[in-house]
Length: 166
Image (tube, rainbow, N blue to C red; front, top):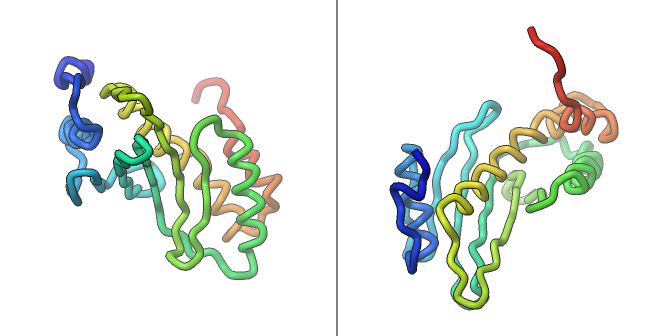
């Protein structure tokens, strides 16, 4: 059943929409305030912490998807290089590394200027793209930080596609 069959998005607050989507998928979530929600979404590699916040000032719905990593300090340079390579391959959002918190971060801002309204499918796609991006590049980040691979070689894992059947 489509999300629009459950949610009428006309004049609904974007964070209310996110809460309805989280309920639809039975994700754990915490409504931090009127303009912010945090949730946990299970992926293949990790459980991702996703926070969405609405800024009425600049009419932007911000998404931050994080997961913990503790790369060896001597591999941080290579981690930044593989992040740059990953960001070159994505069309929306971007990865960044928060060293102090030891978090890999996927960030995206959906601008809804001029009283635009985000629909449930749009927000669902936004969340899905964050998780898919994290899932796609997680192995490359691990290969660089813990496997000792070069960023160029590690990123091949993320861009390679499987062909055939097993």
